[in-house]
Length: 188
Image (cartoon, rainbow, N blue to C red; front, side, top):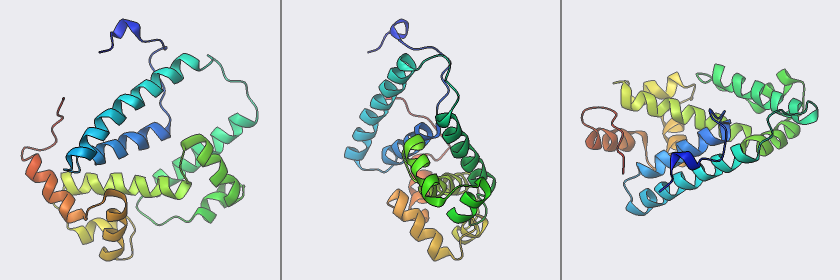
C-alpha cells in the first residue's frame, strides 16, 4: 500500500500519449474475461503507476529547447492529425508530407516519444472510438465500420479483432452482459 504523502513527484502530472495507449491496453486485458489477463492487467496497472511516479521524480522542471523539442512537436502534430481524421483513412505518407518530414523519420520519432509506430497509434485511436460506439450506441457493426472510414464490415471486424482479441459483436455482448446498467468502474 502506498501512502499518498510518500509520492515523490510533482503533481499535477502531464501524461504523454504512450501512457494513454498503455491504459487502453490494460483496460482491454482487464475486460477480456480471462482471469490471467485480468490479473496481469492489475499488476500492469500498478507497474504503470510506478513508472509515472518515477518519471515525475526524474524529470527536470524545464526542458531545454532544441532537437528534442522539435521531435515532440512533430509527434504532437502527427497525433493531432490522426485525431482530427479518425473518421477517415489517413496514410502515413500523407501525415509525413503535411509535417514536411520523411515517413522513416516520423516512425523513428514516434517510436522514441510514444513507444509505438504512428499507424499503430492511429489504429488504437480508431479502436477506442469503436469501443465507444459499441458500448454507448445502438449503431450496427457495419455502421461503426463505415463511420470510422473502413471499406467494409469485414475489414473493420478483422482490425478490431487483431487489437482486442475478439470481434466487435463479441465485445459488445460481453460488455453488456457484464455491465447491464452501463459503464461501471470496479475497484478491486
